[in-house]
Structures are given as structure tokens and as C-alpha cells.
Image (spheres, rainbow, N blue to C red):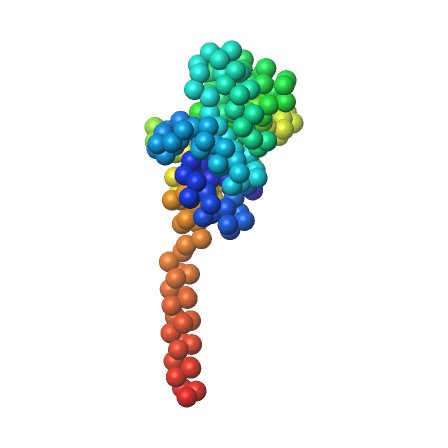
Length: 217
Ligand code: G3P
């Protein structure tokens, strides 16, 4: 399973990229706007920090304009994936872009039919939003399981990115559901290796070791 960071913060990306466990980055207009810096500059910096795919979203709403933005974004670096919203215009754009060999990540997926259409249009990635679906009483993990089944049944190469991840539980369940990737906010990523019993165990090992050392003197 691949781990992407869901952030546009280059300090967070540098910090966690050092672990060697970050396979890519996803951004969206909200995440980029939080940085208060120029979009192109931020994306170019991120694309230099990580060698894996970096999703940069289009802001246009009409297919032609999305395609134009996409063709421009992919000039910024070799590892840019163009994030396209799940709309009728977005599907048109994905179809054209995939025929040109431009990688796309179709975002804001909340149903199997949306995922299936995006895959059929040639999306490289689809991003079901787990947290936002759970927030309205849906089941984000069930959606990932269903998408996995449909993509496998029809042999699509499209990869599933579990997005809108809210905690370690989502990451674990997305892995069990067969998601290819989880895109994880930095705050959640930083907690994935923590467990209170690990901390408790380490503290007792250290204290037993100190006592033992004192006895040796
Ligand atoms: O980047 C897309 C998605 O992961 C956003 O998540 O937390 O804003 O629902 P969130």
C-alpha cells in the first residue's frame, strides 16, 4: 500500500519524506490556499521534494479550460498528476487528457457509479472521500471495498486513493479494504506509529534497565 501526504505544506512534506515512507502528495485548492503562496511555486517545490506523484487540482469548471490548465500544470515537473473534479465537464476533460498520456486523479468521489465513470474515462486515480461521506451518515470504507470489487471485476488499472482520511483507523481500514493508496494529512501521519502501550512498554523497559544498571555498580 502506498502512502501519500494530503498537504501543501512543504515543511511537513520534507519532515516525513525523510522517513522514506512517503510515495506521493495530494493537494487541493483549500490546502494550497492555507499556505498563502503562489500555486505554481508551491507545486514545483513539492514535486522536487518527492519523486512520486504530486496531485495539483484544476480550478476551471469547463472541460476546455480544465484541459488547458492541465496541459500547463504538467509542464511544471515530470511527476505532476492533474486533479479533476467529478463532474460531467471533468469526465470530458479526463477522457481527452488520458488520450494524451496525462495522468489524472478524479476527486470528490462519493459513489461507485462516480468511480466507475472516472475509471472508464481513463483516470489514473480516483479519490473516494471517506471522512466527508462518514460525516453525512455514509460509509467511506464500504465505498472503498465496493470500488475495489468493481475495478478488479472489469480489470481497470485505475488506482484508488482513500482520501479525506481522519485518523489511523481510516488508514487501517482502507488497507484492509484493498485501497491502493491512502492520502494522509500530516497531523494524522505523525500519529500512525504511536500507541499508548508502546510508550508504556518503553518506559517500563527503561526503568527496569536503569534499576539493573544501578545494581551492577
Ligand atoms: O484532498 C482531498 C481530501 O483528502 C480532503 O480531505 O479532510 O478536507 O475532507 P478533507
